[in-house]
Image (tube, rainbow, N blue to C red; front, side, top):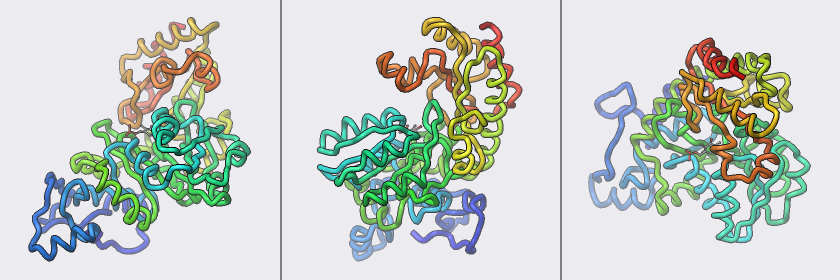
Length: 403
Ligand SMILES: *Cc1c(COP(=O)(O)O)cnc(C)c1O
């Protein structure tokens, strides 16, 4: 499983296009898709060796596959980590992290504002196995520090958050984690390595949902966990081999090709998002816009420093209204008046997606829990895509003009 030999010191854009395994004997220029569950061995001796040393050859698709290896090499090169391991989904990557790092009796500190399934995984599923979790403010470092206990093993952060785009300070969290003898994992879905490389700020593990910007065109489910070679080879790869949260080769191939255009897609989608955010901030029917790229955002300076000067492509805004019922009616009017955008809950697509968090991603919370989380009935989330920005603004104006 030897990486293609490239000169030292290449830029990230080049690595995104060029990193992977070398071509097969046929010399294909676009990386091959190996749809096979098993691999034929030259002889019994080699087979025995590869079963004992899975990093040195392919045996069975649950353990590894060359297309998946190319994806892992490429993502690690882009994140700046020594290694990465593919998983079936983003949630499977977080499951793998927990299975590898945590034992019964360990304690986790996690932001209260992370992805909903991540909250459930730590609080409910890992809780069954004797792992205790504390949930703290996304932005108040004192709360993170105060939550540290002698058995704290892992800090888990996601930045910016969904849907309110709160930004946490990765370098400061790495200091808190390491001061406590714990490890820091960062879910980097929203920024992707094109904008934000948590390992350069001290994070130990990076989580990805490949389903989002890495694929970027809403085609497949995928995930990945990035870290040191030692953690990946000695801890995470054996768990994937045993437990089977393996990334499918077809999905790996789709995301591998998606990574080649990640940088330019993110640049273009962030530019669209900033223009849309400024348009909404000036609109009389909008009371508030949440976007790290705006000067009005609470952590604007931190976000610009941490995210390569870009705000990301997800933003949210509150439409005007006098009470929860009118706020919801107005939000639905804006969403339902759209003729271009997709009404959906996904993000990270070239197609702009519009959604109403209070009745979808946060629909299972009580009204009080939603209030505490700042998710009002008038809140609309946009995951801005690659359409012409004037068409996105015009599509939003259709509904906003009716309020
Ligand atoms: C979507 C998402 C996940 C989960 O990824 P899946 O591929 O859907 O399992 C985790 N974290 C964040 C921030 C996400 O947006």
